[in-house]
Amino acid sequence: LTVYADAGQVKRIVEMEIYSRWGNQVYRRSDFLPNDQRYSWDGKFNGSELPPGIYVYRAEIELIDGVILPLMGEILLSK
Image (cartoon, rainbow, N blue to C red; front, side, top):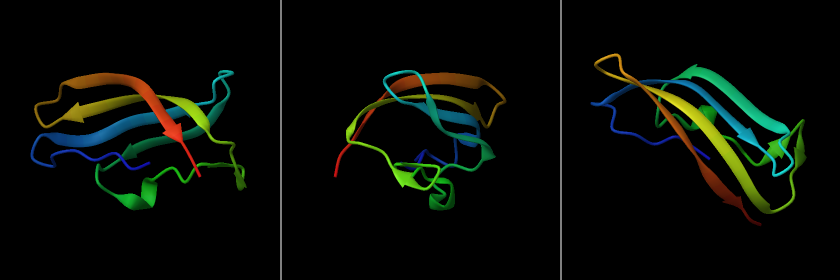
């Protein structure tokens, strides 16, 4: 999972977290640029592949004008 955004409107990703359906945090990254695959989530936790299913994400995105947008949603992890 990579955060893609219009670089002309988004300054940075303040924070991104991903949780399992049981509420366990499986990924967390702070202060990175959008569209950078080096900061992608690879569907693993502690080096082990997670089972397919629905995962919840929470992110804070800082826009060029300084406004911070909170975002939440679901992603489907499949094999």
